Image (cartoon, rainbow, N blue to C red):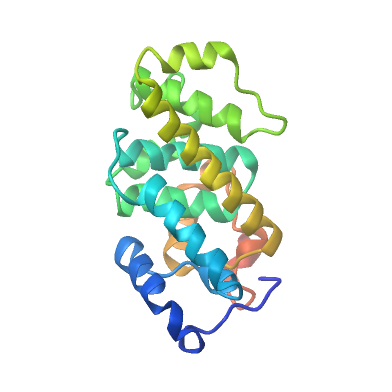
Amino acid sequence: MVRVTPVARENAPELEDVFQRAEKALGFVPTSFFAMARAPGILRAFTRLSREVIGIPGTVPLPLKRMVAYMASRTAGCQYCSAHTAESAAAVDGVPPEKIAAIWSYETSPLFDEAERAALRMAQGAGASPNAVTDDDFDDLRKHFDDNQIVELVATVCLFGWLNRWNDTMATDLEERPLEFGLANLTGSGWTPGKHAPADDRREARS
């Protein structure tokens, strides 16, 4: 259950442009935005960074960035961001749910190519604490990506590193869509909503 009461949308009309952009991009406004809305400058700064990192096309395909975000979040243990990034990868970027469900088998699964494996290996190491990325990981990345693309990939991990800490600390409630996606597609790899299940949602018992 969320630890800081989110601001009601109707009580933050000055942030309606932020909420509408999120709604257009994701189909809903993340609960985390309404808690962040208590510090409007922080919310606006975060959404500007988020847009640059993962909201607009860069030189790295958005589906891969979303998978990198999912891998980093799962490694860090943030169930909220794991459900979000996995659901967005499928619903927004068109990654097949079976590929998302198989992400822990990325090293051997035929669903992943060598470039994806290199990016996911880096994301897994970067999501660990302490950081486990090696020079060899970067050597593998450079077989498939130039330095500008590597910066985009690392920025994606770092963006969600911030979100992982925010949402795990705040115990942010999951929204309906990512919660449903997680329950349908991620539980086989050990995902549970845990503290991110809404208090009035009976599915919390499944965690």
